[in-house]
Image (cartoon, rainbow, N blue to C red; front, top):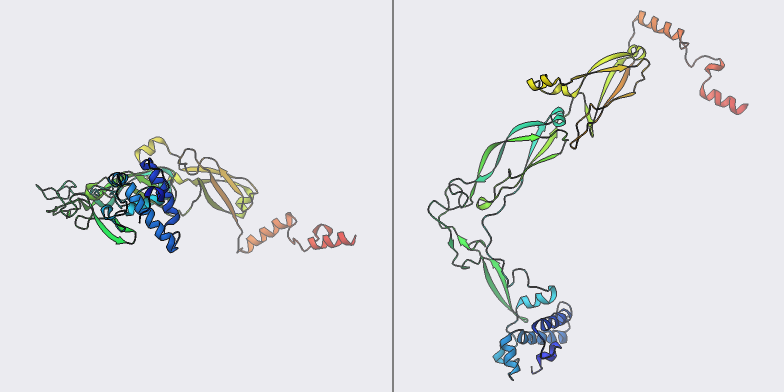
Length: 390
């Protein structure tokens, strides 16, 4: 091949390194075998690559400018030289990950993982908050080696295989030339150093498993599935690295009386038919009644009951809303307590009770409801028929 490398890349003889690289990138994107498999195009791609090999190397370019043969044996021949990085540079504008510009040794000291535990709480504890002592089993820093992973009096040594780089180069030949890639060193697992005498307690990991007790403060207003984050209470990282976070997921147990809808509490009261008709006042327990009675609670005179007034003639299914007696919100405020009245109809009456009910029905004109033949007792269908016939 005797063509001028400047002509092959389409640049002038005084072009700088950036102009040469841009020209190569443009041509490589057009001519790469993965883009254009035509044999003639592949040969041209080889020419472009060899031209770039010469002009991107200051020494080879200077030798060619002095009259040397750009593609002769003195310049490495047709199959030598350009690296995998140059090709990746053409397509992505930079070196291939891990190709020639290594990432360096991988640190032993790394952040630990987050941990998740479940906390069962009553509805009152979730609503008003609670402080609990929890036992957690996580990785903690090894106290024997202070997280270094080495036995007392020893220290890591530089890996002889990668000479502390944490990576080793692998070279493969292809029709494009030599492709050089970097891989983590298997001898030191990419750390660049080896622990010849690991700590007996942690086997060189810098951490051990341990059960410990932590105090968790659950804020008022949490709901089922809420996660409380405890920063730095999770797993300690390898090499004694900083701990991750601990997440406490709240599981609220069902309540026999109240159900929660957002920040509102719902409950129901059952009343006999006569009580619903006459009206009454009920003493209802509030959710606060489930809280443990402490000296502080006694001093604050926390209200545990509410006097609910049932108006005469209250119908079954009617609701009464008691403002501000629901669940406190996480961002302030408090929901309501919604009470649904259920009127119970007696299913069995003795003789005297039936007699009194019939007497009441007679007084109200209801003793034969729906069975009278008078105009005032006509059925709905009868009234509709009369309306059409009229």
